[in-house]
Length: 67
Image (cartoon, rainbow, N blue to C red):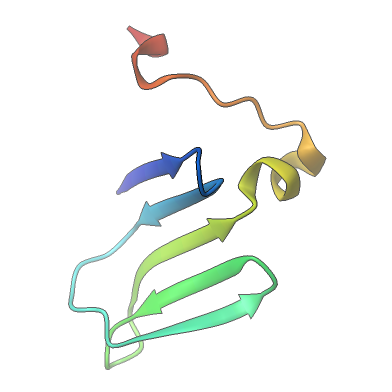
């Protein structure tokens, strides 16, 4: 699994599986799933993540903060 965050778009992407993305499906406002042709989950995109995750209490740290 891998995760990325784009502060300009305020969007996070969690890559959880392998395969070619055949379709996307918005399952809730701000939550989009990337799926294979067979319906397998490839990734999850969270839009407006700083406002919607943890009720707006998400703190985003720079990538090197854990070092």
